[in-house]
Image (tube, helix red, strand yellow):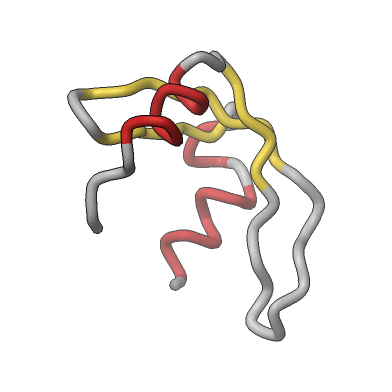
Length: 63
C-alpha cells in the first residue's frame, strides 16, 4: 500500500466516519458501510462499526 497524497489524506482525516462502498468482483458497488476513520502518520485506517462480526470485515478476510 502506498501513502496517500496530502490533500486527499487531509480531506479524509477531517471525517470521523466514512461511508465506503465495497466493490464486488464484477466491478459494481455494494451498499455503503459506515466506517470509523483514524490517521496514523500518512496512512488512514478504517474500522467497521460492527467490528469483526460485520459483513464488511468478514469479506475483507475472505479476499
